[in-house]
Length: 274
Ligand SMILES: [Zn+2]
Image (cartoon, rainbow, N blue to C red; front, side):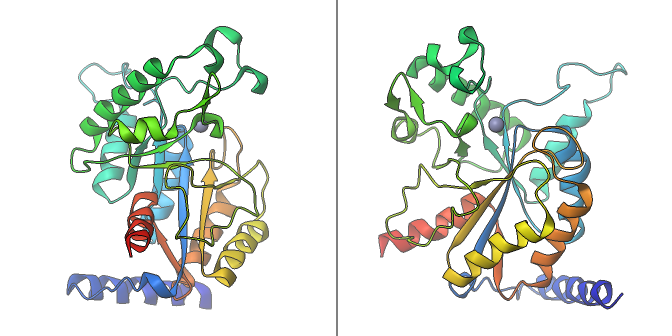
């Protein structure tokens, strides 16, 4: 009960502060936390976005498809997912690029014919620019895109393509994978195209999620969560666990700066220039 009341007080205070334009992001003193979600899953629209919106936290969503975008049960009605992602972007969430067909290495179980082992750099470039066009329709305000490598794999035929897509101007920052030890502590030399993240596995508990944040807090670094399904679908954690975790972050705003991947990386880029 006390927990709920204090969160309500925070939200009310925040509303008043932001109405008067007095919110201050003193990011240098706080650990940076990025909540990222992959694959444009339906449970992210039905569960994650409403949970984050209810406490005014922003997430980053790496989209490779817009489910149901080309079909609707009712003629003349806009597909729900298109509306959902458009509204999410309008509410300050980041929509980012995760390629179009999500090709992964054959050794991870992908059929040879559709695996990334059969790709060329040219093909991945076309996919990434196609998704950029799609994202610009859903989210016209954002001019640059972050990128997450499908299955956290940065190679095509033995070539690391991360710098190529950056140099082509397709994307600004890239996210790769990692585990619950992937805490970023050295901002100065962080490779902005291969930022590690913790790939959160099915059944991860609230305590494990909090432990990672605490590790990040201890180092004053940055921690990137890589979520998938919430309350269903792949690599899922439960709705309750996700809600309790984001509430925990909100309650500890003095310790954590929870922000989008691009905003966090803009901050780190500025530090690298110094
Ligand atoms: Zn993915």
